[in-house]
Length: 193
Image (cartoon, rainbow, N blue to C red):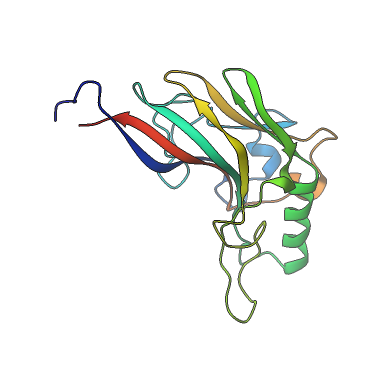
């Protein structure tokens, strides 16, 4: 299809990327390339559509722009081998020992402790036996920016999860399968086709 010059469409769409442990033999420490920081939207190669919807590392496709309205950190549920206490410790140690920063064009758009970015995702059942998650499983229960954060065409952006006092042992020794997603929710503006 040909592009319509000068006409744009606005699409409500999230951007997401994940840090992942694929098997129960890999530890969190093995998967980290930097011992104190996890970077999202930087390494998107060899990831499935479940792990990222980015086509290139740290930039939007073509001449698209993005208006970020909300951000969340989603931690995958517990595995069958986890007992409830281990899962509680992993999630609480992860969110209370780290700080999340959204960088747009090398400028900090926001920095706050990870617990400020609840997931708004997960599974819950009527009897309360759903899997553990970070926050209520409601898409409205997320952090929303007071003013939108704009990502311009070809502008670099990334999210970093920093562990200022080091990664807690309960997190370092955790095994997979596990995912930690960062989801930036907002409006993608692109050429009409």
